[in-house]
Amino acid sequence: MRVLGLIVLLLAAACSESFLPAWAVTDLRAVAARVEVEGKPGRARPDPEDEIQVSILMIDEGAPASEVPALTPPPLQWAFIACVPAPTLIGPPLCRDLIQPCDGCEGTPPANPLDLPVLSFQVPSEAELEAAGAANVLLQGAICANGPPAADAILSFILGETDDLNPCEDPSNEGRFVTVNIPIETAPEDPNLNPEISTVFLDGRPWPPPYDQEVSRTAPRTGCRADLDGLTDEQRNAHPLAGSANSSFDLGVTPDSLQSYQVGDMTLTEEIQVSWLTDGGDLERTFSFITDPARSVLTQWRPFSDAPEDGLLVRLTFVIRDGRGGTDWVERGLCVLPPPPASSPP
Image (cartoon, rainbow, N blue to C red; front, side, top):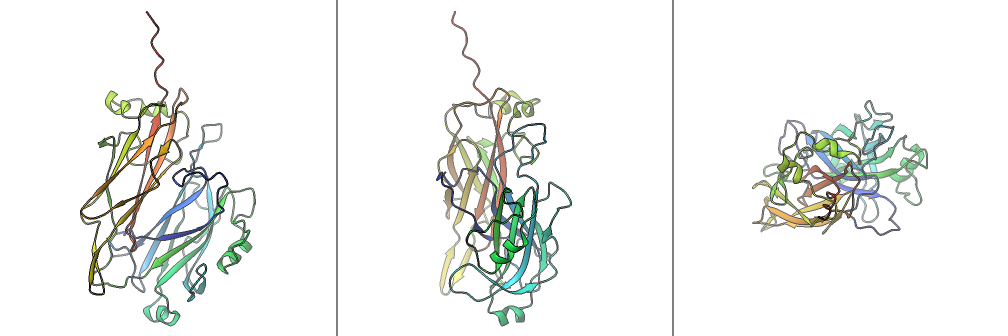
């Protein structure tokens, strides 16, 4: 069985000169990562010597329909190392001891163009971690679209030389440096478990098909009207029209998602952060918080003012984190159509 776990992502990416809101997805992003611990379902953090698998969620703005099949995000290649970090007080994390083997750390080229980074390795022993003074392990590397990362740039990044680096061998390709910080479990007798997204509602109702579970990476940004064929009128009408009023997104978590935990003599309860992301329309906010006793949170989304006749697909990604190592995410989609033409005057 597999386990979801919180990962903190530190992304070395240049700031946008346009100062777009953080929820606006206009380029390649690494937005979350998930650890799966072999034989320990529900665990958010591994113990020493556990076998773990780390999946990294990459998103991008939807690709338009064209003679070239759409793929969002585009084909990716990556290169990572797993390591025990060196003790540092300031600055980016640095590797001390390499962890080998690391299956999947070299995705150049990936076996399947639809692959996203999935990396597997064994956490070092408790003695090895103690010798390094480490309470976590790291994955560090780069992910590039349409070409391989640059080996020299990755080495410089791992050494902490992060100024003016381009992660990709071809500077015209888009890429991101990524550090995944994986904390080791400190209370195996009462381990941190993952929060889980249980429901995602649109305007108070279950999300309408056909994008109610995920959005295919091969779905083009334009032409989604055809995807609505075969739906009931109610399902089709749940997709908003361009220029219509705000829609509400309501995200709920399972009852056990907000765990209690001890810090010294204090008993605290987790606070879940929700990150809202979209490549179309306007979101009310980038972050929300779910605090006990609440089990859901609401935000507003406004569609754009016009859409092509064949429809425009909006991709939405919602990520939750519990602040102690647990994470979960869902992907949803909406097909925005233009409003029907005004009826002719009598």
